[in-house]
Length: 179
Image: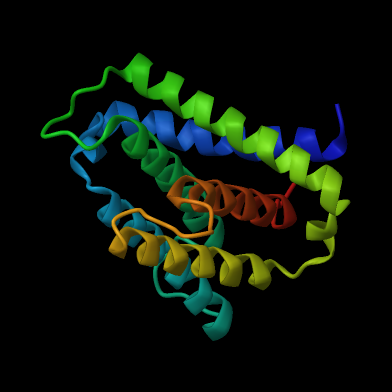
């Protein structure tokens, strides 16, 4: 297993632990969220990261890492919502939600490994702040696609943007790993 693959798995495991604990606390209450609301939730988290990067201080204890984890987990929620549609209630079992989460995280990892091969790990030379800007750009693209009723002329769809948000956030987690 490559170093990048091991680092991805470690970051993904950290995200999964948060997702499963919140799933135990809240169930799948997020199932009622329409796609636009999921995108807006990701925007809030990315915007806070950028604000913290620019200001250099924070007044709320949570720092950048929890926000990156939140982006990853909400992007996976977004992918689940795209696949299943939103619901009027908490309609998924714990086991089904975790299985869907694992499936989308696996797909994100496969995509990252393929792109990482082609780009020769260029992400390692990037500044962490660049990941934030790229995530925000992907959010604005996603909002535009949502405003166009999910239709694109030449571009990838909402799902591709969610996968990119996951992978840029994973890179941020890897680059800021305190261990």
